[in-house]
Image 1 (cartoon, rainbow, N blue to C red):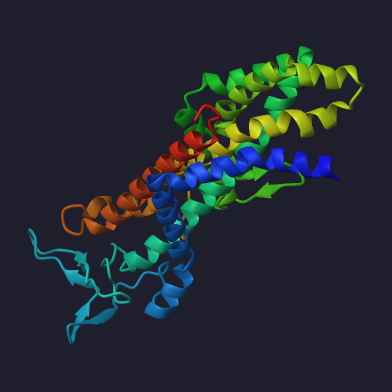
Image 2: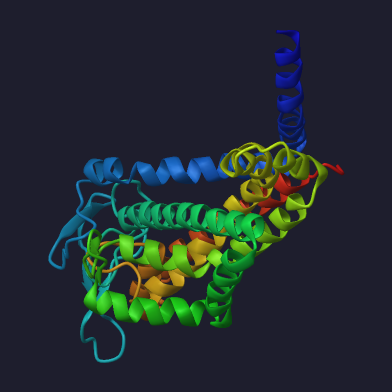
Length: 330
């Protein structure tokens, strides 16, 4: 009994120490709080849309709203040049009443910003899970079993690595957005959110699998693993009990960094109209919607751009904090 308690204390010790280090990192903890706030606010998108009585996915070109006691059209007649066309209303700075104004379809930008954040976070999070899981399996198998397994998996990674990541993502997106994806048991429609999730999750696998493979190769030659092999311990048990816990810290550090990278990739694809498809919204699609309004209604594009910049910044700082906290040399 005492041996079991002692081993439990030893196993929990490094993680407890890492958590204490992380909690003392004020910058990382502040960024964690900001990221949690961003997630919560995005999750409240349906609540905000219902409270504001607006549909962020339906054009409202002929709608009017009350601002400072006066009825104002959402789409105002243009006063520039020949006076042709319409310009969406600018920010009212009144929550629930076109706080950030409208886009060129008369839709509430604030409501779309929240829904866009929800989709951007969903795609970044789900694609990160796919990348981490597949890269871990490939890295463990290639590094531990070696031989033909390592050769085949490494060559597949080399093929993916040979393509510039954005070029590969754009190429896959153009093909799959047009035709969808049919893998027999799994069928994804052309406008499904799972398409950008799948594409982004695949293109970054080599960037995680390679360092994991390198760590596993080093662990494979360590004394405790060689001793376990000599004692006849099953290979799957060695992988789960000896190898995986020793690479888990690297995987944890990768999570916030991959979230940030995947969010930027999704925004780029959506801005190019080959990511999230209408009527769904993401921060990238909202920036594209506001591209033609930069000189008249800049907040349509600025708001999602600032949201992306803030989210990526806090995730990178959080990733640095996790790396320092989990570094045994600290």
